[in-house]
Length: 171
Image (cartoon, rainbow, N blue to C red; front, side, top):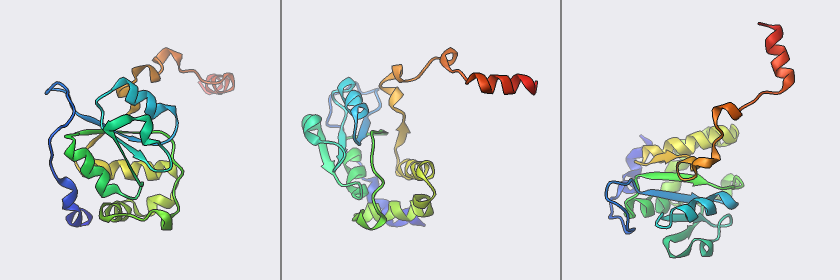
């Protein structure tokens, strides 16, 4: 099995942030843009991994480290050492070329897990990345966990008039 060679990713550690004991420890994998910065601003003790070339560690302070996207093993080890049980993946990122990833052993395991999803489009790739992260002991959360104003209330969701007319015509 793919996970059999990746057991070193399941190391345990102690939380280094000051938070109430009953709170889950949420980590942030930061890509480019304002969204990860807004999340970090709302959660000053949140451990952050800035993806090299996409997020600047200086924007996040001492709680952050900067790693290459292919260093999946180091990324997951860092969050385990911080006591994280949940992760938020936020911000933009260009899909790297398959050859430029330069993975560590955790990255090799992730690539084996992701497999053909890499070539099937962004949605397929993100689903595979999420499944891999969850398989390694983390629950993946949406940005709206920290920034609840990101979601619209149900009454705000609309459909274009042309779609309404088509639905009414078939009713």
